[in-house]
Amino acid sequence: MATPALLRSSVMLFVVSCLHCMSARAAKAQQLPTKPAPSPEDSIAYYASGLATGTLDSTSWQLRVRYAAALNAGAFQAIERLGLRGPEQSMSLHRIALVREAHRQLAVAESLARTPQAVAIVRCAEGELLAIWGFPLDAYGRFRSALQADPHSAEAASGILYTRSLLTSPGTMR
Image 1 (cartoon, rainbow, N blue to C red):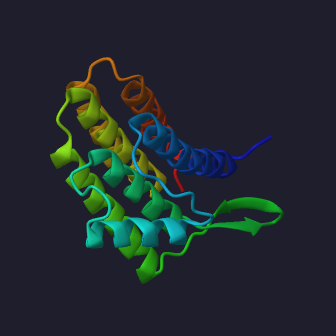
Image 2 (image 1 turned 90 degrees about the horizontal axis):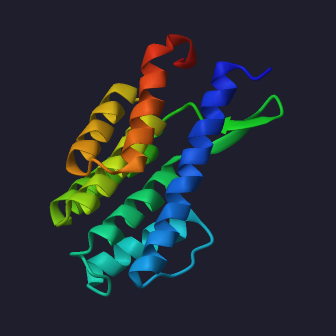
C-alpha cells in the first residue's frame, strides 16, 4: 500500500510534468514561437535570452507562463530514495532563486492577461506552483481566485478540491 508521502511525491511529479505538457500544448494552440529543449536549463536560457534581446514577445502572458513552468522544472529535482523516485528535499539558493523568478513571471503574466479565462489560467499555474512547493493554503487561495475570475474553469475547481484535500488531511503533509 502506498504511503501518504509516496502519494504526495507522485502527485507533485505528475503536476510538474503536466505544467510542462500544458505549456507545450498552449504554445502550439497559440502558435507562439517555440524551441524544443531537451532540458529545463536549455528552456530557461532560451526564454531568458529571448526576453532580454526582444526576439520573444515580452507582452505575451502565455510565454510568461511557459517560462515560469521551465523555471519550476529547473528548480524541481527528483532523486531516487530506497528505489523510489521522489522530490529532492533540500533547497539550494539557486533553486530558491528559480522558484522566486517563476513566481515573478506568473505575476507579470497575470498583469498581461486580458480576459477572465487568461487570468484564471495564470492563477491556476501559480496555485500549482505553490502546491508543489508545499504552500497548500496559498495555493488554495490562488485556485479560489482563479475560479472567481472564470467560474467555468475546471482546472481551478480541480485545484480547489486537491488543495482542500491536502489541508483537511494533515497526515499527507510532512
